[in-house]
Figure: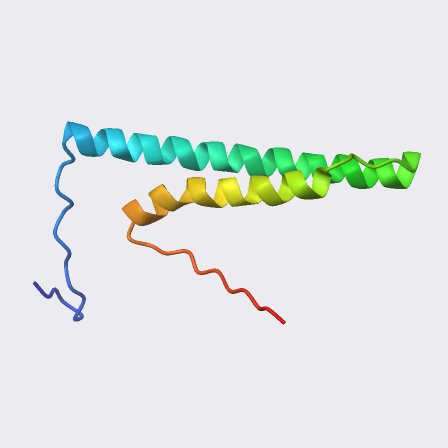
Length: 95
């Protein structure tokens, strides 16, 4: 249906059933966990850089932990992204 000014009116969303609400909550929980992981990784990188700068010592394996953590966080964001009909585009360039 078109309203004044040519804008179209969208239908209200259908109510979610109990299974759909569970999936939405689970996807939201996964996204929150992914965010917490990214926050922890940023603290790890900060601690490693500060340790290298101030104490001339770094956190052993920090680079590998960050690699794995970012991959896990990205996969934890995928369910909420899919539920909202969005996508994640990853560009990689190889030489």
